[in-house]
Amino acid sequence: MIVPAHPAAALVPDQRINLIGPQGHGFRVSPDSRNILLIASTPYLPVLLPLITQCAEARQNTALVLATPDAAASPFPLSALPPSLEIYIVKKDDPAGSARSTADTLAQLAEWTDCICIADEPAGYPGLARTLRENRLRPSHSLAQALVVPPIVCGTGACQGCAVATKSGVKLACTDGPVFDLLELE
Amino acid sequence: MNCESSNSTGTTRNDRAIELAPKSKMGLTLHNPVMPAAGCFGFGTETADLVDTTGLGAIVVGPFTARPRRGAHPPRAVPLADGVLIHTGLANPGITAAIRQYANAWESSPVPVIAHVAGTAPDEVLACCEHLGEVSGVAAIELGLPDNTYDSEVHKLVLAARSSTFHPLIVRLPLTYADELCEVAVDAGADVLTVAAPPRGTVWHEASQRLIQGRLYGRFVQPLMLRSLCLVNDLVDVPLIACGGIHTVEDALICIQVGASAVQIDSAMWVQPSSLAAIAAQL
Image (cartoon, rainbow over all chains, first blue to last red):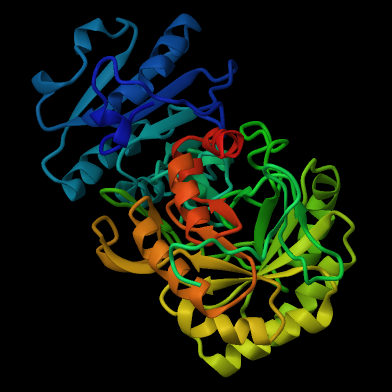
């Protein structure tokens, strides 16, 4: 799971790396979920690819909201995605604009979905959380999961550096995340 | 004693074993001079699956405070070109909860456990040390001094720790004022000095559009630490632990050559967790 600006994004072929894991937890999609809504901006799309495959194999109804400045410039060919995946392309001109466009689509699909997985810039998460509360009556716990990846220093919880503020206190992305309940995030 | 001579206060028992606190009633025998630095190893269980501690001299857990601390509001870590800035705000469960949660792990540690107490205030230090003194798994206490402090405050903090425990007392000096405060710390009862706490810095955090202050970690700290180590080594006659930017066995050897009896490994653990055991094995 390599997100933009992550040091791993600068790796070159044949470079030797050491991996620590697994730690924490990723997106959790229940087999009982019927309608899965995935939300990402273009740089974060690779994070959701395994989930897209998993949902397609489980024959779960899946929709992807992809915020992109240019659909043709996607790092991953959208035509290679499973045909059963419904794709909504929303324009991403700037962070605020992206949040509005993505939020519009979220508002449209909020009643339809029973599981939302989001991989995007955390700066847009408060707006998405607000949209979800406005368009979904009493959203259940963990209805919407969101990826938050601050710089992770030690990867074990020892350094306490990768803190994420939530309504139930400060959590660590490496051991408690990096996927959190969207409505729990502060 | 100059920078090129070796500090002989840590008594050698065999090739690598040392008595780090020969003047302490309880003593602190380490079978290897290598240990993790406070704040890098967690509270004792976080790195259990990653770090083989059996070949180390000790582990250093904490920092701990008398009362629980939620720590600093995120963001806490900012990557730098050659390291990282971290500001945790001393996040910890508080000393009594920490003892309940981790005492069994400390008890079963194959090497001595050194508990790091943050020097927030004399009464808090006293409370922490009293609680830790009752934990059989704790072999020594390391007191971390605040960065911006002065002689009389240092004296009070060290004296509070000294008066509340028979354990060997290690005092971790702030890097910037290590040479100014080392004699006060020894006079107040420090058995060992750690040179030094990571230096403080300030960086601009683009995402939150604000300045963040915190401790600087990385190999670039080592020259700063070596300078302080040399200065402190000339001023006091107690065993010294070198701490700051030690990433290789060569780094560790330099520290020992200029007067350190032991070394603490900090950011190297985050680059390669096995480096701790590797340095210990090669030293």
